[in-house]
Image (cartoon, rainbow, N blue to C red; front, side, top):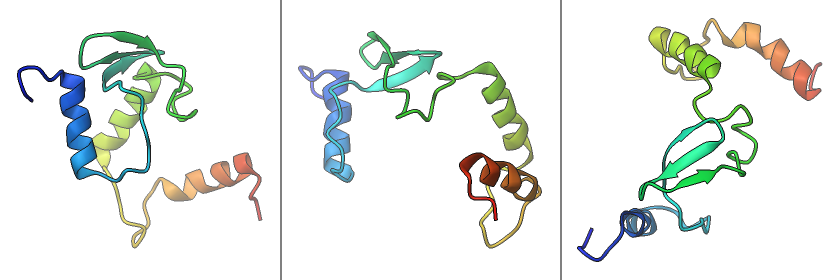
Length: 103
């Protein structure tokens, strides 16, 4: 980051230089979020109306979702699909029923 370069510009320059160019994001670099609000690297606050394209419809850092994630992460982070795990079987019928792909 140069003296005249903002934190946002520095982040955008790194992304442009080292990642795929499949999106043209807004000139906002989000650093944290809580509920429906996010804060950028410059300290500005925004109402997050995009919500991760509906992936975050419970908001950022919802306490129930964070607690559930911690419970799982305290046990196991990730398994390859080359193995089974104790959560996939019980989850599968719930998932297929909710998206209409029951067989």
